[in-house]
Amino acid sequence: MTVTQILPVALTVVGLSLASTLVLIVAVKMHRGRSSARSASLLAPYRSALIAIASGEDEDGQAKAALCAVPATTWARLRPTVLAFLPKVRGASADDLSDLMRFHGEIDRATEMLTSRSAVMTRQGFHDDSPAVAALSHYVNAPAGGDVGAHAMSGDV
Amino acid sequence: MVTEMVKTRIVVADDDQDILDLVVFKLTQAGYDAVPVTDGVAALAAIESDLPRLAILDVMMPGLSGMDVLRKVRANEATKDLDVILLTARARDADVDTGFASGASDYVIKPFSPRELMHRVNAVLARDTR
Image (cartoon, rainbow over all chains, first blue to last red; front, side, top):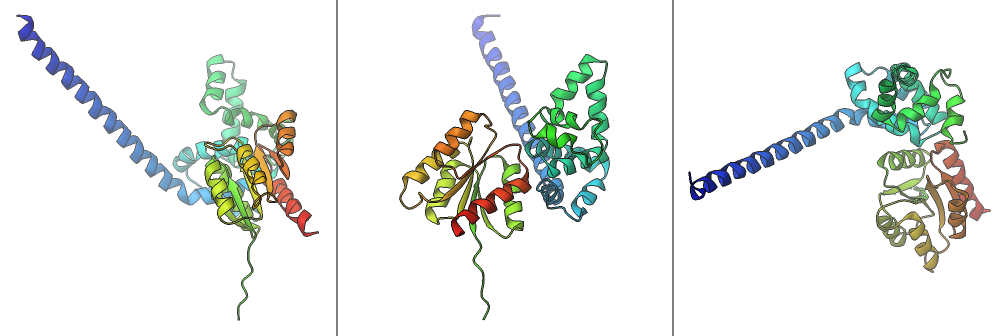
């Protein structure tokens, strides 16, 4: 085969590859966008409860009770949002958020991650949610509602 | 005749949506008219269009920083007396010094206690009404 015969075939193959890559990128982005929108709409009813807790306005404990009652699948989606709030507040708000995390077993998970003899697991614990997991680590072994974390969260330690 | 009380207007600027929502919620619960904006340019526009009683500004924001907004506010005859609280993660003494030297009424460091922030807001607002 001569170059003039190969060239159109090669160009066609390259063109098709580029086109299919482009289609794939667009499809992935659309999927992520839809998934993100679906996740946001699913979490919307819980966000106001979360903000009430984080702002210290959940005096009757209704918001905390509502978020403690969510099923595991919903919690899995809600968890990153709660973790995102944790390093941003301190005092009673942080304690209330940590109580919520404790209820859903996150403190135990953090304890396991941070005290694991596996260096990989420990690193993974920090990598996944850092700096939120680092903030959460201050609550490890702390009594529920205690002020150990509040002091740690203040950055005074 | 129903007399409607005018709520105290407070502009809140932060590019972190979580903190913005949280502060606005807290202020609204306390009976203030909180105006949320997500960058410095919008904060300055909100302040200049309808002078609030107080502005709570994050320091590190896209466009104009909170410190830039504060300096512009102080340089403008119409807005120079506005109370401004800086709410920021910049916790070094030098940062706090710069904040107050630029004319901040108060300086709150993140992570912050929402309850403490409200005490600071009330204290700043009470200064001028004494």
